[in-house]
Amino acid sequence: MTMAAEPLIRLAGVGKVYGNGTLALNGFELTVGRAEFLCLLGASGCGKTTVLRLIAGLGSVSQGRIDWPDGAAPGTAPAGRADIGFVFQEPTLMPWASAFDNVYLPLKLRGISRAAARERVEAMLERVGLAPFANVYPRELSGGMKMRVSIARALITEPSLLLMDEPFAALDEITRGRLNDDLLGLWRGKGWTVLFVTHSVYESVYLATRIAVMCPRPGRIVADLPIEAPYPRREAFRTSTRYNDYCRQVSAALHRAMGEPGP
Image (cartoon, rainbow, N blue to C red; front, top):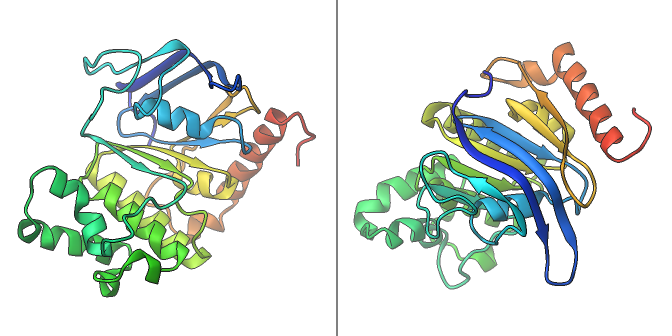
């Protein structure tokens, strides 16, 4: 699968300076195509999360522009844009609500009754392996389980654009692999666009149609690598020569971005 010809988002010359003077992004250029699975890869502090937050409208650009070719106003995502889902690094759950009600929240905000949403919420909890924990509160869940609730909440509205900020980093390897596969299955079936932040070369190669490598702060794209392996990708792909070759290429690009010798 290659990048869709029709762009969904364009970031042109984007800069971001925080109030404390930190220059997080400078001259950031990126076009994300419809139905693409794009991974942002880079060291901690290079601005990956800042990019997601600007796209989501959770901050404003200091220079440059973010364009939505679907006709939305340029500069930032429209406030309250309904077709964006965001999975943060930390699971931002309501501690007083059960797993079910945390996942149900976006539907509740859309005016869908709890009864009408029940089957949909239960199916999503099943998909992330939490069906037996529907009535359990966040304080009774492990860190990994809390993140799965957060992922389920972002997916419940079936957004056309899903922003994911290292969502699987806290999960064990088996659960992480299963959710990688589940996410790819949902993406391929629903036609979403996914912008996925990760520190893992191996995860990015397994998931992405394309990997954009960022340099240290101020962040900008220094390598843009297509991953042209076919889907579905299963365990056989992880152990293939092709996968290992891609991992070496991406790892070398990441080392160059860091100004370090390659592997």
